[in-house]
Length: 165
Image (cartoon, rainbow, N blue to C red; front, top):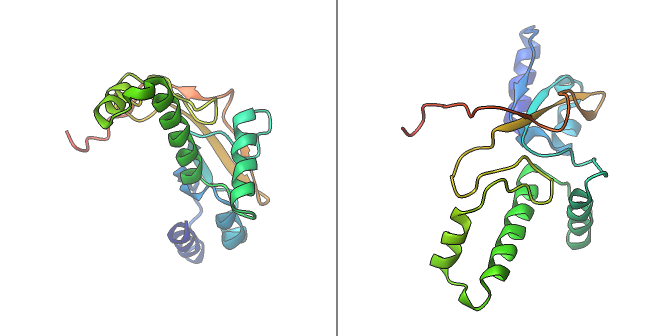
């Protein structure tokens, strides 16, 4: 997020007045604190739920454990997906029981569809190795993030970036 702040500061210095839309890596308290008024108004497209959403028990659990193991830590996009990946590993390892091997785990993961780690992120087809087809929009206003898109997630066809094909 530090480079995003620098870009936004340069845009502000040049008098650029534009809607700033970026990826969810800036959905971070440090971005808000370090960017100050320069970053106010930023839009983020996200495949995760808001960290502040206490209506999602899994988000509450993630935040509780983060505070328990690393007091004062700031939840972020990468940490949430580490939590989700650990949950998926434990689930599949438990299902495999005494047959847990790397090939068996990889095979089990190929069948995972609609993984949302108990609702903390958009459903993902892990086995298909595709990006989620659902997002939501957040906007930073007055130092706090709020959802600006309707409903839970907006879902549709995946966008082909043209990379790797």
